[in-house]
Each structure stands twice: as C-alpha cells, then as structure tokens.
Length: 234
Image (tube, rainbow, N blue to C red; front, side, top):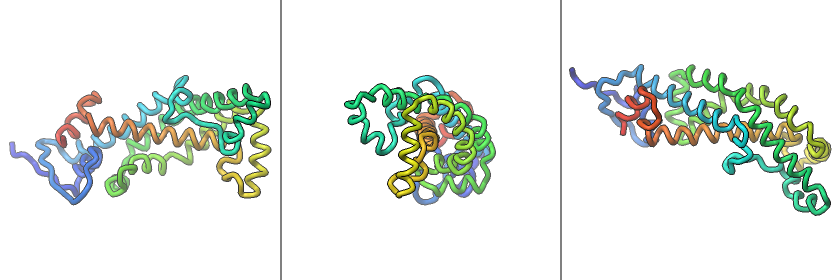
C-alpha cells in the first residue's frame, strides 16, 4: 500500500497543532492515517482534556488544595485580611475563602456536558482558529463556546454556597459601592460573580494543562486514536 502524504492545509495540520508545532507550512508522512482520523484525534484530545479537568476540579479539594487554581479572597478584602484577623474576624475570613473554593468545586461538574459538546462539534472554521490562534488557542476555543452558558449555570450554585457566610454579604455591600466609584471591577462587585469568574478561569487553565500532557505523551494517555494520530507526528 502506498503511504499517503498530507499537507498542513488538511486535518494533519490539526495534529501538528496538538503536538505544539508552529511555524511555516510543512508536510507529514502519516501512513494510513486519514483526514477523518486526524480530525477525530483532535476532537478526542479536546474531549479528553475537558473531561479530565472537570474530574480533577469537581471534587473536594479540587480548588481549595490546588495552588494553581485556588481562589483567593477578592481585591481589597484580600488586602484587608490581615487587619481583619487582628480585629477578631480571622474565622470569618477563613470560612469565606473555604466556601468560595467549595462553591467552585460544586459548580464545575455542571460543565462536563457543554465542554464535551463543544469538543465534539469542532468545525472546520473552529479548527482553523485553533491552528492560527497560538499556544492558548484551545483554551480560547472552549472559553468562546462555553464561558457564557457555564457562567449562567455556575452562578446559582456559587450563590447557594457563599450566602451562608456572613462576610460575603458584607463584602457585597462594600464592593457594590466601590464598583460605583470605579474602585472595584464590575465583574467582581459581588462574591458570587467573582467566584464564578475564577471558577471558569481555573477550569480553562486545567484544560490547558491536560492538553499539554496529551501533546507531550499521546501514547501514555490511553486512547487508540490519540496514539495513532499524535504518535505518528512524534
């Protein structure tokens, strides 16, 4: 059987992106790997990265115990934390920070179906954006497709978790006034909005981290299609 050659204008270019290859157009000898398989490989990589990210973050300690995505106290409340602790509000400070991260952990599992759907619905136009979008293109793809609807899903869960802490209400009152004066960003004018935003940031960050692993070691990621497509590009 003759070995087929695919140029970077077709789906193997997606494989090149997934392996972190950038620069001028180039050809790859991929043997019997078809364009459809190459496209399937990219979709599989996106879906796997999203699924693993959700499983890592959507559990106790997923945010709270992970320094890469841990959600700190917002803005001026974080700056004032030491003073508040000296005034006897240390316990409230700790309760709020724990509640914020627990809220994120509770919300993240709601993201799985939308993320998987976004991965499976990758179009030629989407693929082109990923190819030309640089090292954060996959994260940008997921954010573009899912940030708004996920924010809508996350907000009620986050609200239910944080409203139990009295300090959250106090922050909202002060931050609301500060936002009106331009001292606090509008997206952070309530604890709920802040935690929802940081939850999504953490989720997309972790998807990016999982994607790096797939690029570096497709054979170790356990999927036949990933091994076949991305392994051929090693």
